[in-house]
Length: 548
Ligand code: GLC
Image (cartoon, rainbow, N blue to C red; front, side, top):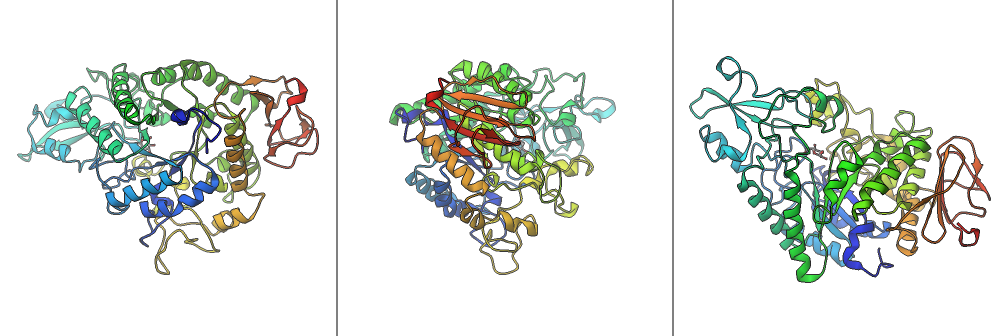
């Protein structure tokens, strides 16, 4: 929708990308699992919403131990989701509608079923096949202890022991996530070469770029020493072990990938996007990943994790503008994704229906995010104001974190429940299956209130707020790329000016306050009487005549 931009080649700099969690978007085959043909069927809906592109969660052949983030073949489609011909149809259809297509590429680890890992298992210690992964002898008597004390992000040790081809207990391999996700050894040049082949395979199929999983990973400290705080990763669920993440060598990989993208751009002038999931301790560290010859963008998760108060939001936004935008890249804002509790629930009281302040704050946060300079990502269902499903029974939970933490942590299934499209009862139009086909995760009855058919018919819905803000973003020259200037406000309020007099203000408190601009706003997350900004509300005004 970036019609206003003259430099269409740099489309990504203020693009709004919609994250499609394929298995939960729309099921065209009636097996209760979403698929690529379902995504194609949903494109007109996304076009109407006004997004610039889609990011498809992994659909590659995979035993699905971590919903496709365990990849057995990087250059194919799992039959559950379709095939390469369907992928080509989807990409072509998206492009016809002016929607870019980003793939999710997973270079930190593969799957136990990847042929190279199978080859490594069948080969002896010290072989070239093992050198593509991190195989090491154990410590202690008979090598029965892991090679170091690192913990997996998802709980438990980061090493598993293999049985050697002769049937004896053998070496250990490293997996920073589940044991079914062995980490690649990026110090072996064969790994880098293989991934360049994978990039080209998909670029030749006309994709517009890649979301890069675990982009601060890849390289580990070469000596794989013990960590002073071995459980830190599992405890924080952030990649904080400084020996396992954020090693300087990783930047060479992004330079090489950027060069591959530039090659394609040189052919047709169209920029291909690399956006990284870069979990590092600070905006300043993150800025290193988006230097002009590295990734184009990196998700800025500090906005997502900021507490709901004006000071926290102002601090993280200021840091992003200073450190990340300072590199010449644009900040990539995000409030929701498939790993996080949805905003409606996160910002509110945890009732099953997500009632209370959550929905009002989530609406306000959306208007704030979409007014900030840079790009933004929306996670499917965010535009419907879907709350987290917090009361899924234990026996349906599939997130490996649940299993690996001894059923202590329930985190990611609740935001992955299949979307409600229509009707009063599950499957809410999600699956075309015969009556009785169940979506892969159960949908609660109250999903009816959030179904897209209802949302489209109700002008007060989240859907209309997102649609209106995306359409205004495409039209108003002040929005998208650019700078921001803070305005003096009352303590609970954040207000800033974009370009020529576009003002966005958010009242983080619960009581009404004076709006920074008089007049009725252009767009607001809740009704705003003249000159008033109600609590838990955001609004946009165009204020040419105020000298702002
Ligand atoms: C990323 C993905 C997450 C996945 C993990 C391991 O954090 O977003 O879903 O489980 O990487 O690949």
